[in-house]
Length: 189
Length: 189
Image 1: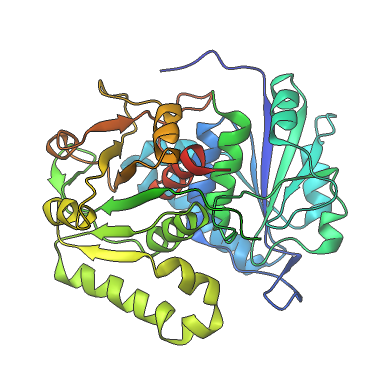
Image 2: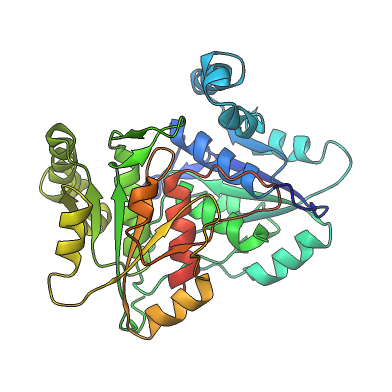
């Protein structure tokens, strides 16, 4: 069923550097295969345009290219065309600066929003962001891997999305779960 | 932050048999490590009591036990106690019949709800289920792996949750994403 698609423009990025480790040191994390699949599939479900994998490491970029090659032109493309459709949104990017350049490539400067498991001072409500997205504003939603984006990275954003809370106070969702929930909150119909 | 926990009682199950493959044949699927982690973490976030992995295959059950052993008593338990906390909710179950026996073991007969990517005739709204959960009713929410629960399995349920729709009409979320979104819709605060 193809719904009447509202004019939305949302891009996603999954950042592997600079992020924190559990000791709050700045590190580069390894790419996780299922992050690419799960977030691309959720992105496709909710009408995301581009999903950027951000890593400066050439071997990690090559790994992403191999995965994409399998599903976009190799055996995977014939075995599961639905997966091909989702993974066609994936782009590779060296760092945050080139990410910001590319998403504003067509002259539209997106609002930069990051997610964080801890409450930040510059939080925007999901309701407000949802309203602005459906009124046509361009957003880039940025997720960190590892223990999350570094302070310096967070300071480059226009705002933050509030942490996802349940009844328990436990806030250690996988980035795959967090991205899925964020997209559902902002873009479900 | 520990919130005042409402009296909710929700269990989850991830079923590996009987499920369909892409040709609608009944199969048993393999256990996926990240399903266990992601759904246990989301379950812990949203106050789920037990998360049952349903598979009749002894080698697959052993794999689950090895994973749990690493994170509950092995090195993983010291390296990441948060993960231990989430995985402590995982239980192993042979089949649907023993699942239904176990969840009603304390005399409370839970409502059996399954999810499906296709709209079913006996769908309950998320709003209604949420209301009933927060009024204290016991629910078991059941997810299928592969291409989803078989018709016979679906016919054992009291009802279905509606498919998760975005703007695109694409409905091929991973079970990890679907479970995260379902829990957020039913149990976020």
